[in-house]
Image (cartoon, rainbow, N blue to C red):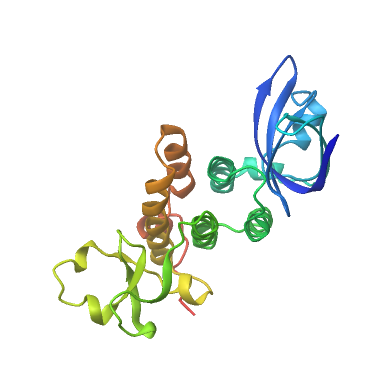
Length: 255
């Protein structure tokens, strides 16, 4: 009998059998895990298995490669996120892309911790540019964890690291403003918002630029179907400066 126990985040559930589901979890220490939950579509367990919930997960399988049976106990509910449009859309996107991008049973403790923190922030009222900048940071980390990370540590052309302002859409390497100035390919570069390098808050425009940057590289690897593309569009809807200003959110000064 093979067993596994850890706290985990509920990602997705696919109906299976009369009343069960195959559920995918992001374990805090053990990476992506899948298990069959009997009665998952019943009222009680459906509430526990809401995407984004943090649960105590126990998996048992008779043999290697066999789908495990899963039992879960609720640790923290994020079900209320479903009642706010932007948090609900971000939650749907994050859980779907995490389930689609990660390989089974490869530990990703940094990613799991980041997702848990982001969902807690959304539950605590994180909205607007704060939410979208946090989303961009998560997407950047997801790319890194899966081996597609951007190189933002130095200028690809030998320029100053204090002047990094762009990213090459081909190589994913940073380019300084001075090295890019006047080059025929300057307009092809992707803007690199400062908060992705130095942390802190972002302006509304910077949050939108960050999502355009991460979206370019996500599309290269995972955004090949209408489902994921649609989920991401809904998650970032209303993040342009004009749209957020129309909602009454003032631009936030950079640190």
